[in-house]
Image 1 (cartoon, one colour):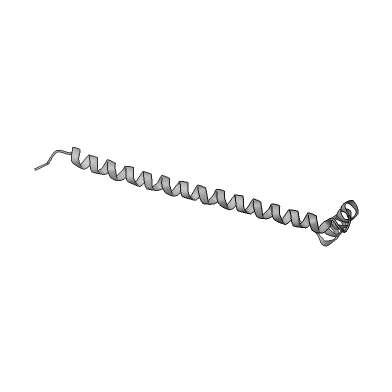
Image 2 (spheres, rainbow, N blue to C red):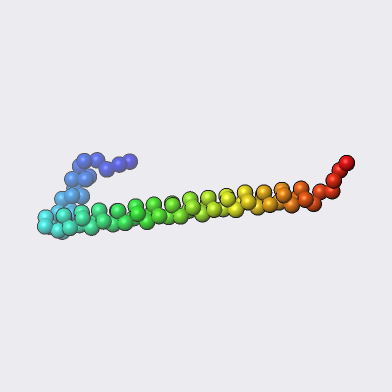
Length: 79
């Protein structure tokens, strides 16, 4: 359930009455900056988690290779 145009108009009028017309651009600017900072932080978290997953996968592959090689050297020759 979303907001219709009537609800948005009422909210805008309440904001206009509470803060005044001169403060609305400042509030909008502050909200824009906050939104950009939030998106930037979210993107950094996603990037770091992807890097950690990649490093974890590489380490797991390395461990599997080392385990397979050690099993090859531990097996006696079957002739």
